[in-house]
Structure formats: C-alpha cells, structure tokens
Image: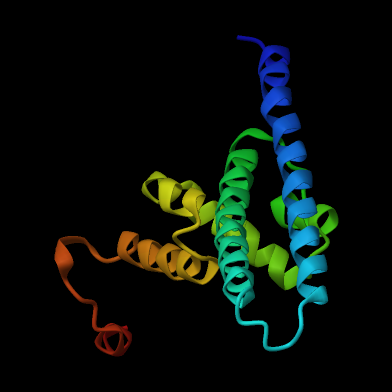
Length: 159
C-alpha cells in the first residue's frame, strides 16, 4: 500500500477528530455558560459541574496518552530535522523547552512499551503515572543481568 493511500485513509479519522473536538469544546462552553448563571449554593446542579470536571480530566489524561503515542509513532516514521522531536513539539504545540523535552522523552520511552497503549489511550493513567511507569520500565530494562545488584561504591573502589 502506497504512502498516498495511507494519507488518504488517515484523513477521514482526522476530520472526525477535529469535528469531535469542536463539538466537545462547544459542550464545555455551554456548561460553563450555564454554571455562570447559577446562584452560589445551588446544590441541585453542583454535582453536574463536578461530573463534567471529572469527564474533562479523564479526557485530558486520555488525550495526553494519545499525544504521547502519536509522537512515538511520528518519531518512528517521520524523518525529523536535526533538532528532532523536541524542537517540533516546542514549535508546534507551544510548550516550554522543558515540557517539550518531557513529551519527547515520554514518547521515546512509551513507544517502546506497547503494553501501556490501552491504559494511556483510555485516560485511566495520567501523565504523572506515565512518567513514573516509563522511568521504572527503563530502570528495569537496564538492571544488571541475573538480578545481581551492583555495589557501585565497591566497584568504584576497585578501580
């Protein structure tokens, strides 16, 4: 299957993504407008506000996980300029250098861990948990063979 065919196949889901994001933004704006009209102490509707906040929080976590997965695939597939993924993230996502570095690092680590795809995609796992899991997985991968602990002080003394 040619490159053009893949691009054409991606355009449909991409258009649906853009439309769904617009629809979600409109729904949130409507909820916020209604909330601004509420009287302080209106206990009949306050639960809906918190439910909406929870839905948005879960969506944000899911979107973060989805972003990490897309960036991991982009790094795998796309020929990046010399500055790489971090520079692209900084320029296109309007984030600080530190945040761009964090996203690029997570994409590299998570890209190598397909077992995290579903929890990331669903929003059950948040950005902080992703960072911890990625670091833990990297540490486990770099653990010395046979489960032996390395006494770094002793190794340094032996030099």
